[in-house]
Image (cartoon, rainbow, N blue to C red; front, side, top):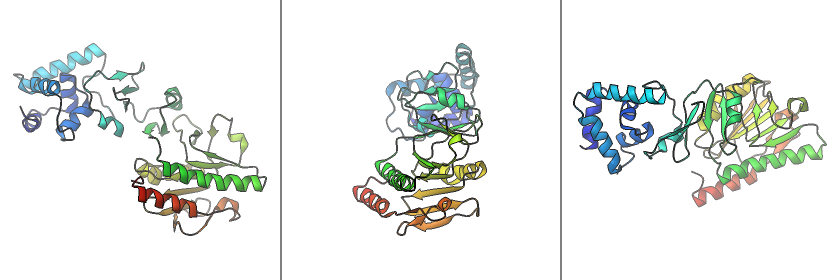
Length: 306
């Protein structure tokens, strides 16, 4: 049976990916890649398992019995309402998935995480993750954060350097931090973020493990995987939490958006050719972006920006 024939059978019988997964033992992300033809040559064992599902007489009732039985054996609902991270879509393995002891996430054989309780995670869940797993928690939702590109680190590092030098030169009371550093933004148990660079002027908000509450200034450097989160979700979160100033630097478009929430909601959209004042310092601190422009240009020439 061809994949096209299976797709037609799936449509005719009204099978969901969860039903097929439970009946065949093939992970949902793998099924999605096969049926969307992202996997061009599925393994023979996978094809055989799928053919068994679609060739079975009285398909619907048999699949229902299979999924219910498998779910009963595993102590789960027959068709779990699972929210999958983008990384889980890359899974092509057919091996058994690993579930943590509290069934709050699943780990694929490739090491990708499937978040099964989106919207209900807490800071305690965040802190219980392995140290090497870098994520952010926003309103109970886990967002995966891959390793940043070199240009991302160079940009954040350059801005951090200029801010740190200014504070040291002025013997200032504020401190500047660079990711990864935890910020429990709303001071509740549903949000923990890691701004690329942030300034904290109230030392009482930090216990040298993490920061509690809103920083005075936050910078995010856009990457393809964080664009929506940084532009939309984090802008609202930072504003509502009481962050005074928020910068979003987009190296792909070559622009910087600056929000100064104490006076205005709309951002100022700037190019990277001119120095930019940090408003919380009344313009005394001005960030020169010439090195940032050079890093972006080098990354474009090397083909490593995208």
